[in-house]
Structure formats: structure tokens, C-alpha cells
Length: 312
Image (cartoon, rainbow, N blue to C red; front, side):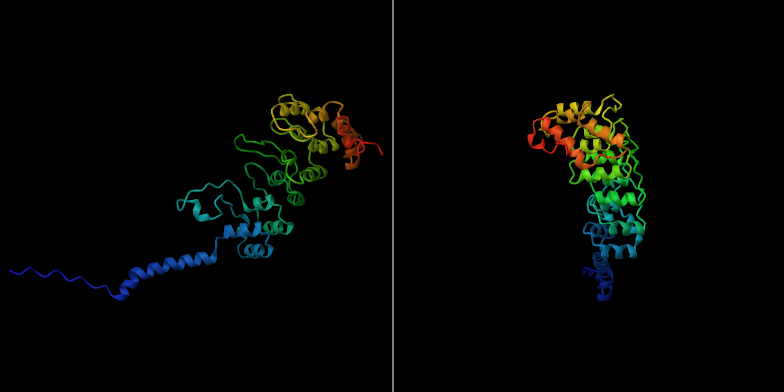
């Protein structure tokens, strides 16, 4: 008996093949092309801010004001990477306004973000925007925020204990003393009314913070009348903080060993400047302040400064 013929394999028509294979492929390719042409709005608004491209920024915000509140992600601001897709990324609370503040954007850029609805009350790791701007050493950002109602006395507050808890913008500006132009930021904050003797959660004033850095930073605060006798929560005065800070470092100290201690000690240069400022009710101007500083350096053996310290 002959074996039965195998069943015929049905042929797939060209139309059905296109429907089964080509159509889904074309949808995928079309989606990729659309995504490429559309771009990633969150990344694009970030790019416009960082490149200071005001025209592009204004157009994007006009088309979608919500981008003024775009979140900034560590991997490049791409929202599809924040879930179970490519990889999980944790957002740390940074918005595009934080980046704009940190890089010292032009007022026009900040104006555009604010007009579109950027939240000026957002915090980053507990820091208000003004504290963040002072920490970044951006005088233009500090000035813009103050002009737009930022609270000079606003403090860092974290849900759990964190570095800088209770610090004001002035504290952070002093702590970031190595940033270029930081002295101008400190001067601006004080001129606009920052509380010179405000304390953080450790009971430290801005002068306590300055005591672990160069004399130049403390000099600015002393010109405004900072009290060298203030004690922190441990009972330490700024000069005691300076002694501890110098003992714990092997780095060379500006103007020689013990310079900050000598400047802050009772009856030292800081006391002289601060007493002048408090007696007059206004900061000692820079010229007179440098005369006092010159005498201080001259007494420490920096003879090139003796002429600067001579009374006019």
C-alpha cells in the first residue's frame, strides 16, 4: 500500500506576509524615527540651559511650559531610563532650575524658566535655591534669587541628619571659600542683609565656618562686624575652631602657621576691624580693611605688607 502524501503546506500570500512581518517592523522603525526627530525634551531643555541658548529655551518653554519643572537624572536626563527599561536610576531631587542656578545662568535664562512656572521653592538635599547658589559660588544667581524674593535667612533642613543641617546661604558661601569670586558672594549676602551671627544646628556662626579656612575669608566677615567671642554648641570660639583645624591638617597654612589663630585671637586683627564696624554701624570699607590686614601681616614678618598697613 502506498504511503499517503504529506499534507500540503499552505503558502503565505505576499499581502499576509507584509501584514505579519513588515507592518510591525515598519511601526517600530517609524517610532524610532519619530523619537529621533522629536528628541528627548528633558535632555533638550537641559542642553538649552547649559549652552545658554535663550532662543531655543524660550521656544521649548512656549511649546511646553511643563519643561520648566523638568527633572535632571544622573545618566543624561532621559526619562525612559528611570523605570524597568534600560536600567533603574534614582532621581536625587534635582530640577533644571538647580542646574541653571549652579552654572550662573544669565538673568534672561532664569527669567524664562520662572515665567514658565519653575518652582523657586524647591530644595536639593534640604538646601533652598539661595543656599544652593551660595554653595556654588554664583554671584549672579544669588543676586537674581534675592531680587525674586528669596529668603536670606532660609536654612538647610533635611528629613534625616545631613551635612550642613541648619546652614544659611552665608554659611555655605563661607564654606565654599575656594570658589572663584566667593568673596563677592559673601559681600553681596551681607550687604543685602544676611544675619552675620546666625547659627547652624551645631551652633556655629559664619565666622566659626571661616575659622577652618584662609584668613582672607574671615577678614571679610570681620569687616562687617563678626563677633570673635561667639561660642558654638561645644563651647568653642572661632579661634578654638581654627586651632583644631590647623592641628588636624598637614597642609601649608596661608601666611604661615597659626595665621588664622592670630587673626581671630582676642585683641587681634578681627577684633579691631569688627569693633570699627560695630561702632560705625556699617562695614569697614575695603581700603581701611586692607590697612588693618597689612599691619597684621607686617607683624607676622611679611614686610612687603608693611606699607599697605601704614596709616594714610
